Length: 181
Image (cartoon, rainbow, N blue to C red):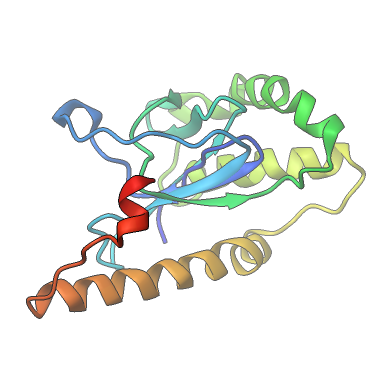
């Protein structure tokens, strides 16, 4: 895994970021989440991670510094981080995310592909929230095992099925009820 990203407030997003300049735009989801985009993902390349604010803007970090992306995350996997009954945190989420994101740790020159990257950014923000709540911080492996792997396994099953169906001259037709949605 290389780069993860996020969406929706209280959620983490992970995926391959689409190049917005090529016209293939994706929308973000509103809520605190961590999001991953898997359209065309081959399972070999790294993923990008970000965190969303309450308006669905994905905050993400790369070699150019912090980005606030309103598009490009439509095909991501969204991982909920905040429970709906956590009203105090939900009300402060945007402010905490913005304040954290302007910190010196996330300046472009500090970026290192393997040691100080988008995943580091997302996990550091999550750990800052846990610390503020008096809870124990999570290690990279603990977060990956608890939150990322279960969601990526589900996505992998879907992607594998989709690839097999399309590779064997099948196509997927929405059910009548789904067309109305």
